[in-house]
Amino acid sequence: MYQFIAKILKEDNFLSLAGNLIIAVFGLGSFALLARGLDPIYFAQWVLFISGGALVEMLRFGVTNNGLVRFLSGASKTASAQLIGSNVLISFVTTLIITVLLIGFKFLFKDSINNSGYVLFFSWYPILAFVNLPWNNALVVMQAKMNYGKMLVIKAINSGLFFLFLVLNYIVFNLSVIELVWALIIINLFTSTLCVINNWDGLKFIKKANKGTNKTLLNFGKYSTFTLIGTNLLRNADILIISISPLGTAAVALFSIPLKLTELQQIPLRSFAATAFPKMSKASLEGNIKKVQGLFHSYSGALTYLFLFISIITFVFAEFFVVLISGYQYLDPETTSFNIVTLVRILSVYGLLLPIDRMTGIGLDSINKPNINALKVIVMLGANIIGDLIAVYIFNSLELVAVSTLVFTSIGIGLGWYFLNKECKITSIEIFKSGNRFYNGLWVQTKVLLQQFKV
Image (cartoon, rainbow, N blue to C red):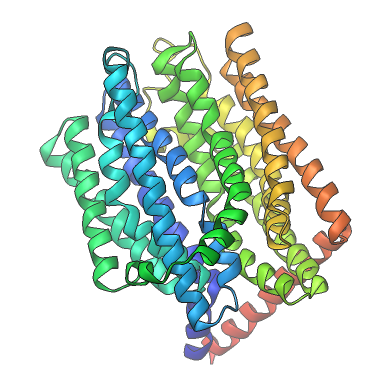
């Protein structure tokens, strides 16, 4: 039994899932403490600070991350050092350009920004961007090397320390939102320092970067960047559009709660995707299209069944989850005219669509079709923005904002399936068969474990 458990604990999917689970649990706990402890206006500023930061990080890391994961799979020791060095160099230059632009905007539009919900983002994100650069570089290097144990350590340190600080703040300190931002910056600095000291971030290889590896990552990145930015906008466009709409910042705070629950649904998706991409990329580089096809069916099937279960739970217990995260203040009809429980239930249906959407995108990137994946995401983003604008400006409805999410995701699934199927034959029947095989095998392993335990 000990050997069986040890094998599970060392398995890539388990370590990846554990890493994302840690981020999600600590992230949800932090979100709940902030939602309960901050005034809705300051909580909305925090949400926009985090959402804006997530978008910018997709831009600066999207240039190299997917390319590094793909090309580092199976690369020689010399090539690996050169690719990692190029990743560090390009991400630093990108960060520098972005922070200069943000500071410039803050200087030119100082009064407008100071009177908006984005004051935290423009004021403090330029500092955070440099502070969290090393540990984010470390994560992508570890993913490319499929070293999920170290990824787990990095995520646990960064997310865990901030969560513990927020617990103390909620009980003892009761700091302002700006002081909380500084706490976040300090914790990120500590995490990055550990990664640099342990040579996990690849900084020591920066001198090995050359024109060839720079070009390799940038050529792939020019498409994957659009894909990642578009993917992030798909998650955050709702919040951004609501923030500039007549619905106001209070609606931002309210809508962010069901979105946070949707992030919980994506824990296993991000985990399995992190292991699927390097495996599928390696198979593609080896010319083994059948293996790519098999991996797609297996991951898609396992995730689809899992998300069906998660979505049912979220739909049925929607009100319980709202209260768990934010208390009763957003359920009070006197403080809001929107039904947050309905929003949660609509977005729980969205969860059913996520596995196939994500896996078609991973499939396209793994077979070196990032341009097609970028096109897919751009079409989805356009559909989402149009739907959101109609929902908030014509109908003044947050419910329709959630419905537009279902529409653009369905469009993305259709496009992704069409283009991936042209390169790598995939079938819906095989997805369900592979899902059945996955859980049947898991059940057999569980029975073996139970039998050993009885002995």
